[in-house]
Image 1 (cartoon, helix red, strand yellow):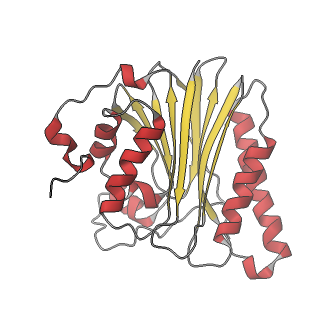
Image 2 (image 1 turned 90 degrees about the horizontal axis):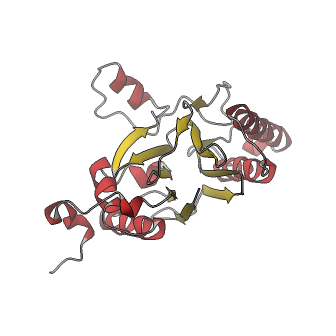
Length: 257
C-alpha cells in the first residue's frame, strides 16, 4: 500500500513555535502526528516535544494494533508528568495531540486526539470524518447552546493537564485507495473552511502541493497562531478527485490585482 506524506510547521505571528510534527512510515505500520503546546502556562512547547519524541521513538515496524497506540499515548502522558515533577517551572505544561496510525499489512487506520488539534479523513475528495475538539466551545455547540463569543482555546483535555483524562480514539477504519488525511493544529484548521480543504485537494497532485496551496490561503487571512499540519495520501487521491468548479477555487488562485 503506497503512502505519501508531507509536513509543515510555521511560526506565524507568534514569537516562537510551540507546535511539533512527527511522521514515520515503516514497511508494516505508520504514524503521523501534530502536537500543540497549550498556551497560558509555561512549558507548552516542551510538553509538545516530549509527546512527539515518545511516540516517534517508541513505535517500531511490527504488526500494530489500537491497543499499542493507546499504550504509546499513555507513555507520552506519563513522560510529561515526570518532566513536570523535575521542573516546577513547567509543572502545568500540557499539549494537544492528534495522531493517525496505519496498519499497512491489513490496510486499516485509526486515530487519537486530545485537545483541539484535529484529524480530517477525506474520501473521494470529500470529508468523511473529523475529530471533535475537547473544548468548551465544542461542548456548547454539541449541546445546542450558542457558543458565540466563547474562546475556542478553552480546553478541557490535553496531555499533561492537572486532571488526567484519556485521549479520544476512533473506530478502526478500512482504507480505500485515494483516502487522504490532514492532521493539523488549530492554527491551521481555524483559518480554512472544510469546503476549502476539499477544494484544494481537488486541485493538486501531491500532499506537498496540497499543504502549500492551503498555506497560501491561510497566509492571506493574516494568521496569529503557529500553524502545523501533516498531509497523508493513501494510494492515489489525485486519480479520484477532480476540480469541479473554477468559481469554487478563487481563494487558491493568484490575484489579478
